[in-house]
Image 1: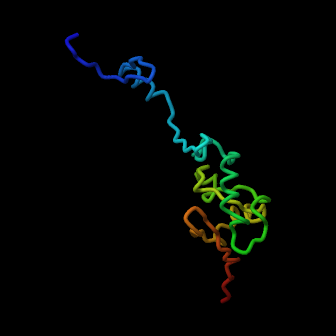
Image 2 (image 1 turned 135 degrees about the vertical axis):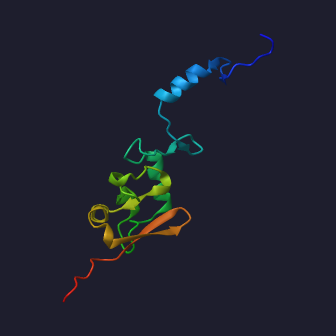
Image 3 (image 1 turned 180 degrees about the horizontal axis):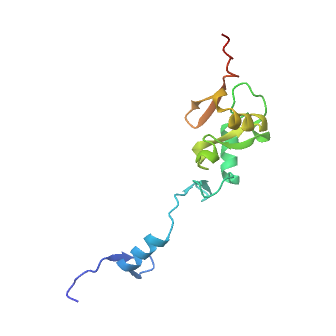
Amino acid sequence: MSGRRLPGLLLATGQFLPVSDIHRLARTSSVARLVMDADSEILDMGRKVRRATAAQRRTILARYTSCMVDGCPLPAHLCQIDHIDNWSDGGATDLDRLGPTCQFHNRDRYRRPERYRLYRAGKDRWAFAYLGPRPTRRT
C-alpha cells in the first residue's frame, strides 16, 4: 500500500481497530463517565448505581460535620448519604450531588420538597434551608 492510511484506531497494544469495528462498538456499547480520586477510587457514578461508594462516603464525611439541613444536629457519620436531586427524579450518584441527611430529613425532603430550599454552603458543600409547612390561607 503506497503509504495510504485507512481510517481506524491504533490501540495501545499496537493492534489496529478498523473503522467498521469502531462503528459496531459505538452502536452496541454504553458510555459511562467515571471520575476517580488519586487512589483510582470512583467518585462519580452517574445513574449506573444508586448508593454511594465507600470512597464517596469518606469524602462526604470529610466535607460535612452534620446533616445538611440547617439546624439539624445529627452528626454526618450517623446520616444517610442522600442525592441532592432525588434519585427518582433522575439524580446522579456523583460526588458533587451527594450529601448527608438524617433519616427524617431524607424522607421528609422527598415527600415534601416545597418545605426545603437548596443553596450552596461552600465550594464543595450544599445545604437545605427548612422553610416549614406552608401556611394555610384563611378566607
